[in-house]
Length: 423
Image (cartoon, rainbow, N blue to C red):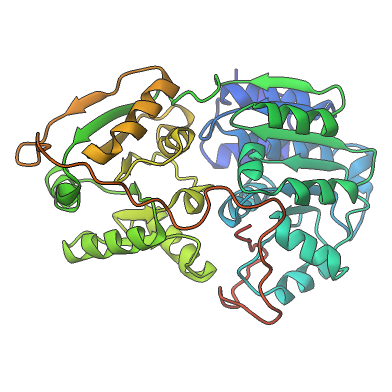
């Protein structure tokens, strides 16, 4: 099947061809026709399957077809709700990329940056609004956004939304939307909580399931290197220096650990940067841009900060430390091996992480290959010590996080019709 077989508008096919794509991924093959009919959709898809284009393309097709084309409005017609600012930026970039030959206006709004530039852009009018829950409700409270004309509502990464404690915010947003609208819901897993949310949101939805629950991408080669905790930094530097790696996404458990690891890599001559929730939006955007452009060899990230990172042909993901939650391992390695490309995920595992490794292997139903690196073997008599957990609770309390005080702008004034919020 080719994109030209899906019935998309010529302007959209041109934009797809501009990106060098010809064959849709499985979720695109199933989701695009379903969305174009106007039906609600429940899609279960792991990261890296092309789901963003899977809803962006048919939404743009619907907005600029038939009677809809003549409709002029300064208020948003499409609302996409995402859990993190990085994902909001990614989705809005997708709208601009595929809508480049159409008169579509889009905007991403999120916290961690000043609200006034967002207000100015909303006043100028926007067709597609991409938002994180907290900042969207800030705009609602200040009456700077009108959601009464929303025709299509997308809830992206619903499972992560629930994990981050956004269920109350989601329900507040849904209550503000018109009753007559199309709803699209995407989730990597379909837990009982997700089923309950879907039941209250979706009306006779089409169903798309392109990945079994909690399965690791088959295009990713997964390996374990067993070593001691004290040897991990030296081992990581050794791997970079001997394997000629480039564009490697490295996961650390904590914000402090990510910063420390990035400094270690820099001292070893491996250009790197860290991204996490304490970094300003400006710093995070610069680091991600430099990484995508190849100016950085390594990007060290925490789990939340890495959500929404979408890099074509990312070759390697390194778990410097295993996550506390086994499902997060699947999300981590899903950053590579995307859209049919091959990737490699390597985890550095010490004695103290054997429990986490056992949970991961149980979840993905496979025993991962063990690799020994001479000089970095795991000591047979090492005394296990507790692994330091990330600071703060794994799952926030219900309700949205604390809103920055008026006037705060930790991310600086930057805004280019896209902006996000770490909520």
